[in-house]
Image (cartoon, rainbow, N blue to C red; front, side):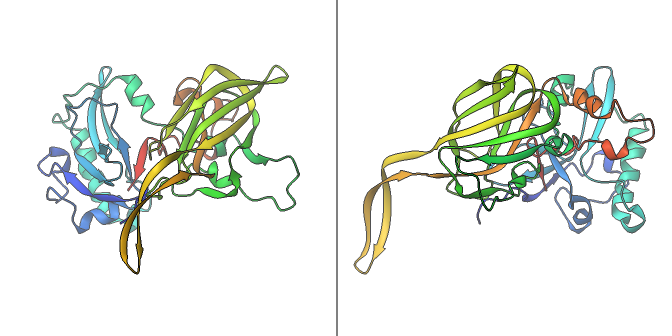
Length: 329
């Protein structure tokens, strides 16, 4: 079974927790959870206190094994917070199971029993929610820079769509290459999120050496020049400084290579061992996203500050479902 981004391995459930008092369940996933987990997300709890145990915890795919939470509670500042990453609002008249779970959780949250013990800092909570649709919200376009204009340009939008299940790879991304991202307006940016292809067992296409340049003050400035590691993890490429820009160029310089790699091959005489030199020549990119300066709350305010009251629904960014900090289940 190969790696897949949107795959869970079941649920670990605190079946006796009072939050689930009105929702029949055992300590593991049964049929009633199928309606709940469809389209749900598991919040990545990597930065949360180790003593925090989710009420409902998705079991992540073995290729990552993140600690996740779908229903959890914690203390934040002077208040108590109940976090649910499943959809318990849409079409409840057709989703009685979701409606029952919502009733159970709301009843618990309104009772004296709702008293979380684990304290979580505001910073940890804010960092857990990354705006995965930031490139769409800011109307960012992307193009491959070439010495000779491309007569048949391809669509590279899957690199910016905030969905790690999609990716782009082809000989057009043969090293070295540069893609330019152009936003509709200038925004404060402190880095990029680069996510490699998520369904490649051998990590072919992972970028190692890269450079980032931004257009500021009428010219191009290098804000990152370094190397990345090969893994399924999203890579935070932090700039040398926060910049206000609308144009960013990402240059992939080279991939991963090695000499004397052991390789077993089968012939008519049987299996034999040989050593080969390996070099990855082209890239595969699932996501390339701006990291906004400040926190996601600043990002939300920036998108909605000029929208008249009552007309902001279509402008709401999708910060609650992060492609880089959460795992779709």
